[in-house]
Length: 366
Image (cartoon, rainbow, N blue to C red; front, top):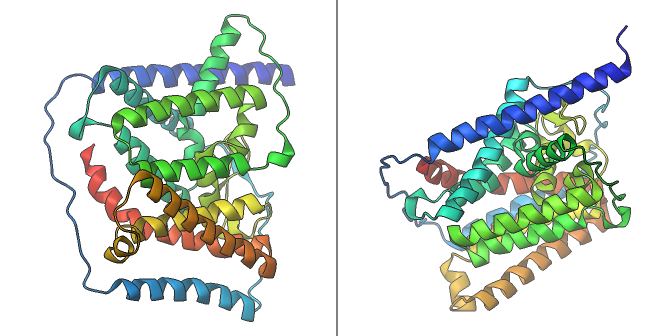
């Protein structure tokens, strides 16, 4: 029989091999992609104006949200919680390693371009961070499953760094236990910052490069302090948000090793584990999309006038506070789980309706 220690050694060798393959694939891809080439420019930013008044959209949105909760309150639509102990498996290595290489490639491409310079239609920071990352991965998380678990470049960088330290023979320090009282509130704060950067600051590629480098340093430091998995599950903004959206997906993450399990679509809404921080971050997701649409309307401009950084920040925070307050009040009536389960599909629906054309049009710039 094969001993447990032997299996552990084989698993570690396999992990080192996978990490080496990720680094090699990323390096080759970077060399190929930064080579000079001719790129055709396209004007893909047309503006569309609807014939329907803004009030029609607002009334429809309000009615949809209200009816969603009314149906829950007046009918017994409770269902049995889905089993959490079903069979799980690791996706094929080509998928896991390929996605990790792709995530590291995108991160490396942004950093290299930020150092060497580059802009215009060739700037990849807005494309990778906003179009493919914030929007594209979010939609994949809703319909497919935990793709970000493998794409996540911060975890890949952490694993590569840890493997390098072990290769040098240095004993890593013991990580501190993550304070349970913090919960996912660090991710909530980070989510507000990301939304502010997207909707108010609206930075160019140079600023996005600085933001990415700073966020990478913070994330790696927190992973070193509390452990990779603990920080991903509680403090890393993108992991927390994409996993939240993943409650709707047909494939769920079974463990931090990357195993997945099959379940019914949207069955994750009924799974336990909802916290107030979860409800708040979902409410922030709904509120940020609503704010992005409203601030571009003539009615909003007539009400608040010329927009500057300070006034837009105040408008965003005030609007988000109202949405969060409404969600918290609903939890008093129906509970955390029901509020989260009712609000998350609305957040996903708003996200798809608001950003789908943005993804399809701007995504062509690759």
